[in-house]
Length: 229
Image (cartoon, rainbow, N blue to C red; front, side, top):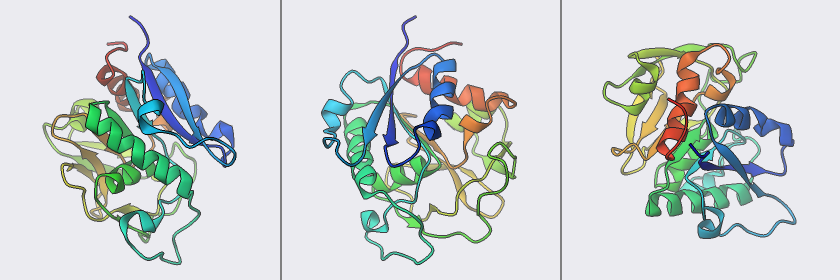
């Protein structure tokens, strides 16, 4: 079976190695990863051109989403932003949803996806700083029965890592909450047709020891029309 092309958005303002874990996880699941790079000196990315030939789009983690993207004033606790990346990813998400390209969001990717489709964010959630090693299980999440996330986890609860301080506030129209942490933070979002799936945690850091994380990336590839059973 051919490897479906999955677009991975990347900022050149970050070290290129930051995105390596996402690439490894996708490639291990059977994808051909195509970076969509955004940064100073690069031509703006046209959404239709950027997704031409792509069977899926994955939005990775990264810096905070610019509050201006959802009409909010900046909280002093909002961290570094990349407005060019925000704008590019928002355009890509809207185009992908419009033409039926499956979209996956991870951490910042979940937040950006929610903003792109009309939702908003909490700019700071107390008690949610980066916690130790990136593969450390920080807390469980409760998963809604019948969701794509439940199919991946094969359970109603699973332990996740936690590397964020922002979270979904107003859920975008057309998205459903499918996972929550014990303190009520939204940890999973999906569209009813499963074309949009996003998690607040970082499964790319958990594939070595956690089967559900490997199934997460298998799901990404299978939704794109390929992969391994």
